[in-house]
Image 1 (cartoon, one colour):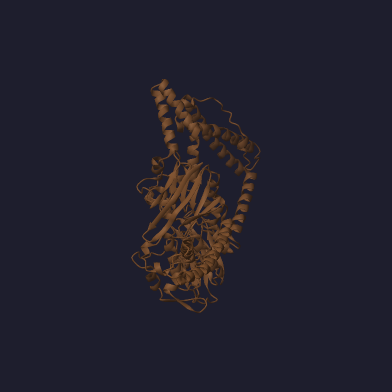
Image 2 (cartoon, one colour):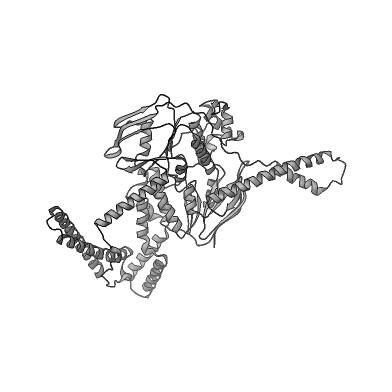
Length: 631
C-alpha cells in the first residue's frame, strides 16, 4: 500500500537546479533513509513534502486518511506553553478519541437513553480499535525515555536539546502512519539514540528519514535513496551495500564519460570536415552527435574533499590535568580528575547530556577555571576547537572572505601552500560559489566552512565537540580519514557511534556524580563492558531481593461497570488491580523475613519500617479500589 508518491518533482533557484523530475515513494512498512550532500536540496525537498514550499513542477501525493508527522531539523515550538499544554493541545488522534469517550460517559450518566447508549458503544469501539486504553502508559514511557519528567516547564526555559526531545515526543506519542524525520539523533545522547532505534524498529509505522548517523541508519532502515546531482538513485540494502553499489555505479559512469569523450572527438572532426553545402549529411548522425556532446561534457563524479593542512610540531609536554574538580552550585561535574595526554592518542568523551563533557573541554582550553587542581599546557600546543554551537559566521560576508580573514595562503602537510580559493575548492566550495554570501549556504555547508576555519590554523591538538552534527556522509568519511592520519592529539565529544568506533581507542566515560571512567578501548568495547557490569549488578540485587511478581495473579476479580467510568478512572482501576497483589506478596515476604531475622537488631529495625510502609500503602490503594468500585 503506497503512503507517499513523489512524481516528476523539480525545483530550482535561479540557475541552480536542486532536483529535476525526481520520482520515489514510501509504501506501508517501509523505512527509507534519504542521503545527500549538504546543499543538494534535502531541506527544500522536506519543505515541499510538508507543503510550506512549492515545487516548480511535479506533485506530492499522500494516501487519503493516513496520519503524517514531521520532525524538522529546525523545528518551532510555542515558547509560552508548558510541555503539558503542548501535549494536550497537539493534533493527537488518541487525545481526540479519549475526549470523545469522556463526553460519551458524561452523556450516558446525565441523559441515559438509546442515543447516549449508541454513542457510548461507538466511543468504546473506537477506544478498543485504537487501543487508546494504553495511551497514557505509552505517553509515560516515551516522556520518561526522553527524560521529560517535569511537564510544567515552559518551553522557553528549556535548552535546545530539551526542546528537540519535546518535538520528538510530540511526533511519537501520536503513533502516525508515516513519519518524516530530518536528523532525529542530533542533540540526543547515546542511550536515547539506542532507545529510539529500538522504538522505530518495532513501531507499526512507515518512515522517511534523513540522518548522518550510520549505525542508526543501518539499524532502522532497509533501503536508501540518494539525491545526487538533481537525480534520485535507490539502493535496496544497508549502508555497506549502498557504498559498494555507489562505487560500482560511479566507476561505470566515469567509464561511460571517457568513452563518450573519445567518440565526441571523432564525431566533432567529422562535423567540422563536412562541407556546408552538402545536404546529404545523415540527420540521425548529427542528432546523435549532440547527444554524445552532452554526455562527454558531463562533469566527472565530484572530487572528494581533501584535508591535508600542515600540523605544527608537538613537543614532549602536551596537556596535564592534575586533580581537576568543578561544581556548578550543588551539582558536582568533575570529581578530582588526573590525566596526562600522550602524543598521537585519540580519545572519545561520552556520557549523558548535562554531565559535564563540554565543561571538561572548556577547562582544557582555559575558557573555564576549575574549582581546584591544575591544567598544565605545553609550550608547543596549538589547539583547534570545533564547538557544538559552531562559529558565528558573518552572514553578509562572502565565503572566500571568511578564509582570507585567517590567511591568504595556507601551508600544507607536504611543504607546499595553497591559496584561500584553492583550499576552498578542495573543500567542495568550487570557484563559482566562493564569492557567494555565507547567508546563501545550507546549515551543513556552514558547518563544513567552520571546520575549514579550524583546520587552516594548523592545530596539533584537536578538540571536537559534536563534529558530526549537520555534516553529510561524504564530509564525515573524509574527516574520519583525515583524523585517522592526524599525528597530534584528538579529543572528541560525539554521540555518533560509527564515528567514534572508527577513530578512538580510548574513552573518557562520564558516569554521573562527577566520576569519569578512563576506559582503554573503543566505544563499543566500553558499552559491552558497561552492559556486563550492569547485568552483574542486577544479578546481585536479585539475589538480595527476589521478588517474582510476574507469576502473581490478582485476587481481585470483581467486575466493574467500565461504561460509567471515565478514561482516567478506568486506567487507575486497572493499575490498582495489578499493584495490590504485588504489594500483598511483598508484604508477606517482609513478614517472613522478620520471623527469621533472629537477633540482628539493625535488620529487624529496617524490616519493621518497610513492613509498616507497605501496610500503609496497601491500605491506601485498597481503599481507593473500593471507592472506584462504588462508582
